Image (tube, rainbow, N blue to C red):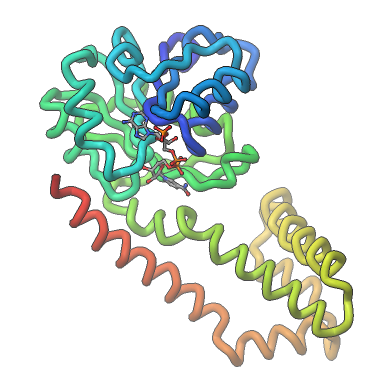
Length: 276
Ligand SMILES: NC(=O)c1ccc[n+]([C@@H]2O[C@H](COP(=O)([O-])OP(=O)(O)OC[C@H]3O[C@@H](n4cnc5c(N)ncnc54)[C@H](OP(=O)(O)O)[C@@H]3O)[C@@H](O)[C@H]2O)c1
């Protein structure tokens, strides 16, 4: 169970901070069981002010001593020297949770030089507002209990899907990079409204709420999006006229290709990052 763990977040930036917030939202998890590190003293103080009960320190080695869950939330380019720094202080029954894009569970185990339970994850930034989409996969020594603990951590900040590790690049192309595509969609929808004469602030609010509301309707009803689309396309009406226009420009193919392109790029970057 997550509540029984002592968690060290190494690199408490955007992702790490969101996880701390998520873990502390539930009543049962004690702040005193969380340690968080980063290097910048001002940012460390801000972290302490935001989460008064947790231990905030600069020293990664002190942070991992006795920790049962170690979250690697630094940038991928920092991971190898951080592992070199902490590996002798990590207990052999500790579990490593990595949010590092493009670094495999095998890469991490090898760098620690121990048969550690590694859970690889790919979250996305909507976790900052507790609406993240996170994929998790277990390395060779990870058990169902380890996966449960990781799931509990990320369910505090959104939804979680367990996937085999070979799909992590595809997940990066879909939900990891997906927020960027949706932001473009909101921006373009706003411009569409502005072009028709709606003042920009109102067009922006209407576009944002339309995307949010449509996603919530899909999520809450569980209906296939095609059925929901059929429900709003009156014969001879406005929506079907626009849908035909989007189809003629290949909206679906564009998105399928966008995910494929991001997946390929993630594979390329993984190959580079896996090499120390
Ligand atoms: N953002 C995303 O959309 C996203 C999605 C999926 C996965 N990820 C992964 O999540 C990880 C973190 O991303 P992020 O957006 O949270 O980055 P971030 O905000 O830059 O956080 C990384 C933190 O690591 C700290 N840090 C750097 N070197 C350190 C060291 N030696 N010891 C301790 N702390 C150190 C930095 O703080 P100081 O400079 O103060 O040390 C910084 O706060 C990355 O590996 C990324 O691949 C991100």
